[in-house]
Image 1 (spheres, rainbow, N blue to C red):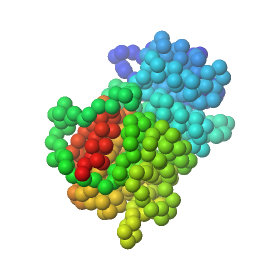
Image 2: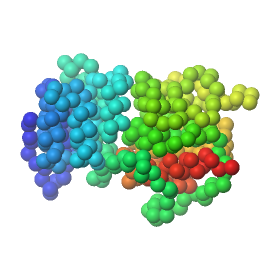
Image 3: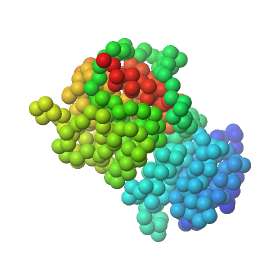
Length: 372
């Protein structure tokens, strides 16, 4: 294990710790990060065991973590790290993330903050450097903005009833609450931190809801299929990727397939889902905006739109249309979000009627779904 000089308190930088069994990759990431004045590589480790021991004794701001390593792999290391550092941003950086493997979903569910796909051929150092510079570094910066840490996901038994009175002062006016408005569908838009947040929600809901739930989670192909299976396994609501023309059914949840937009259409008395390969919106496909717009046309005032943790502002334009069609928008609060980009965008635009911590969100969804 290599330890680098400590960062001066007079010139604070993002302190990065790199964990990878490849010396080439460790050196490549470190050399790439040294180009940036706001980043300092404070150490590297060749396996998970060395990483755990280092992190118990040292303070860092973000960790890049490989999956396949000797002695202790990335998943095992992640679980150990979360026992003593539940809020530390950890980004999985592995070739195993390239094809939507179960290992990456497992890591995200077990507390990884985000992931970046390492080029499959590690000999292509130039490509790996490009990925680090264009993808890995922006994600690191987003995760440690203003010294913010990734919040620990609370156990399901800590589900709480919503109380937003302490959240209103710093975000301005909320829209009037639709306390008695019956809803017929829920749309969820989520990105960074989404798998763990969705697992929490679906595990906390103990009875199927009498309406459909539509989800856009920013992920590549295959990832969403694996995530749907995991959500089905932990909860009582079946979750699946929709197919072209599939009829919407109450009591089920549908997650947009990675790499494809999902939209809703009314065909006679039925609502069906359509898939398309239109250009990305907000650099995303699937995009929450696409789902929100089409759902607002179908359900109007009976649509509840939920914007959870995520980078960027996807969902903002769609939420504007939801409000225009008299629907409702709620958002996750900043403290429980991994990145308060997407929810922060709709909050700052004064589009929401409620802001909820993650452990308050299940009760609010159930309340709104069961209004008579």
